[in-house]
Amino acid sequence: MKCRKCGSKAHVNMRQHKLALCKEHYLEWVPEQTERFIKKYQMFTHEEKILVAVSGGKDSLSLWDILVRLGYQADGMYIGLGINGGIHYSDESHRLTEEFAQRHGLKLHVVDIEKEYGQPIPVLAEMTHRGQGKPCSVCGLAKRHEMNRIARDLGYDVLATGHNLDDEAAVLFGNTLTWASEYLLRQGPVLPENEGLARKVKPLCRFYEREMTAYAIARGIEYIYDECPYAEGSQSIYYKELLNQLETTRPGAKLTFYLSFLEARKSGNLFIEKNVEQAHMHPCSKCGQLTSAPGLCSFCRMMEKVNAAVE
Image (cartoon, rainbow, N blue to C red; front, side, top):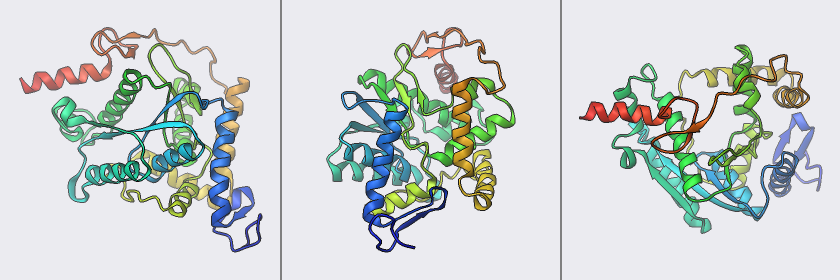
């Protein structure tokens, strides 16, 4: 297979695009496409301050690398979850993120959940009896809370995450199976800003996971290869496996699925109520973040349980 641009040996073959590129031209193509998606979905401008949520994985580190290469004002934020076990997951992901930031002279904000709230994520899950043996729901709740808090407190306009096409297609598949109207209407490349909440964007939403792996390797980005030890058996991984089977026989199926959804949502043809009643949002009485719950947000209610258990 030869590179379409220069004729040399191809580094990456993308069947869904009918495109093969050498390493040099692939490393040009990915930022070019990212810039195109940023403009197409009106994610942000060069004048806005961007906070990139980085986990030590290939997608988030690659996203930070790409945005810096494109000249955007992008700082990073790492959340230490205290998830270790035999593979020292959190320690290793933190080390790789710190090294990436230092190597490129970038600003990295670090939040340690245990230092901030007294316990690591697995212990918080045990103390609040959430997650049925897995801390995933507590982890997601804490990460969302901290990302919103840091973006707000430090004055960032945009919060960028490294979700790729495989991630988005799996979420879309799960939400479609249950016709989760509220989530379907909110899913997309951009979630607009709202009263103290920064705009949330996903610049990599149209890149396949294997494309981002190829980019990270070609750029020499060292990232954590291990999945979170609690991810085994998760629904999202199961959905990804099903979609990968479809992709094998029908190259481009995941991209078509996602883009067709975005087009249907834009044109109002989702076959669900377009005017799903939005819950009234108001500031949490403790942390100030928007919530639809009376009084305290879900995170602050969780922490009240934790504090009560400690006392």
